[in-house]
Image 1 (tube, rainbow, N blue to C red):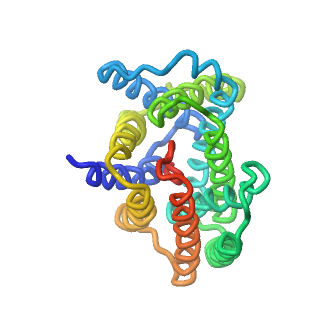
Image 2: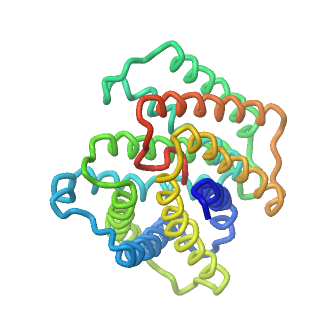
Image 3: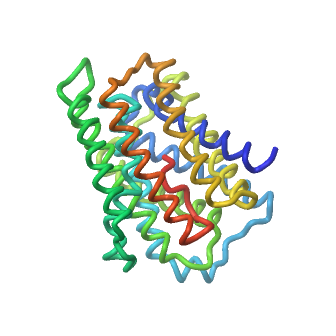
Length: 301
């Protein structure tokens, strides 16, 4: 299987996450995030042993604080994203989550000392207009167990946390993307463990067989296998190709949610989504020009 096909499969896997999370009953978002981190870490740990891919202990010590903080941010990012899926549609949650590159663009001049060009300002303004269109038509009220305004807010919080991970990764040195993800997933699981104990969420007695199967799929396929395929594909593909193919993720999320969850979007929401995704696409093209290789997927869940 060539690198392009592996990346396409990865994006399709990421695009189906929302449907699987919505099907997991009797578990809180923090429990799902914790189990995903544990199962995904074990999968990647086994893969690292099989392929003799061992992180440098010296590099781990040098980046210990950032690895712990970024791992915690990934864990909390998953919690907010899963909460977003619970409160609103997969489409709204996905569009909100794809605001992460916009947050990076806004913060980069202060944190990374990057110049805020007119093109970047245009991307930010366009994305804001797109978000307004999504929120204005998709968050006007509640339907059943859904409260779209709350769900979109959770999606934006998840995006902000993932943006912080992207920025922190800029300062982590001497670790490959695969090594970085493995350590961050493990750190995320370690940080989430006392968090769910503190909230009294660690109770799997009511977990039924269907939810158990879905959580295993989420940990093994959507985390371990997906990240493994992603990082092995990066070695064969150009940054521009990666940026373009990454948009299979949100598009497939919309289609899968429409088929399996009967979700729909208004034309105004679709226009808002196009503006947001178009803005992030342009921002990622700019990023590709600055650095051909990226350590982590910039918008994947």
